Length: 329
Image 1 (tube, rainbow, N blue to C red):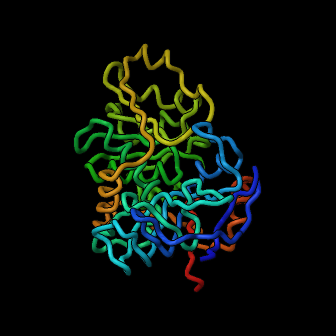
Image 2: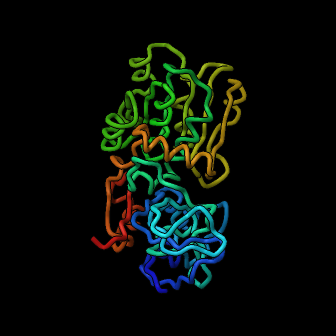
Image 3: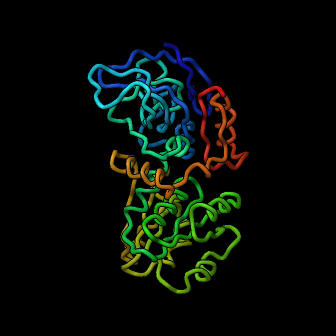
């Protein structure tokens, strides 16, 4: 079959193209996509050929999170039925247009091991961003803290917002630090107990207004820059503070390792996904403890993709969550 896809044709260039999708292989299921959510950071780096973990295979279909309906099943697949509503990560097919994870496509085969059942009560829009939400979930799970402890989250994007929500689900009191007023307003409503604008506020003074001089149990850092590190270092006590670095950053040096050593701080690094974490994230969504849907500021047809990615690259609009719908309505 021929199916429509969002294709990165070369650095900075996005087109809509038809891709030939074969029948599913023995271990695959064919999924008709209803929603796919953009991972703005990773996809932006890939579009600019700046994702340093592997080269970008232009032309390619980006994206690693979508929801849809199973339409066909490979002969060796068990546990799934045609008509099941699922969340999926990577896709697989042969051809000149390759899947670079390959979620932004109308129909695609996905290995059954990368297909996830939707819990009762979950909304498909929440589930369509489960991988990004899982990065925030993973960050909140890595840190050691007790209910009532203060956790500071750096970054007002989807990863930071989900990390703050996931920390709150564990009982932490959270403060989200960012610099975009419209995102901070959403964070104050959905993600954190308090917010701080890192461009207009005296960060240390504002944090002390909220927590006094109590210690901060952990910083969940989705910004990963030296400037951000110098802002939150005074919040962490010698030998007791923790930092969880979450999200991709190009290059090799974005933290002062000497300061970490001098203060004897525990650091964690998280990336990728696995079944346990994705399923836990989906369950939190179903329970209403992790809300991605209110953070989707742009729900647009997939045909708007070239314009959307151009805005992301040019930073000409302040999008938080961007989701493509593929249903044609």
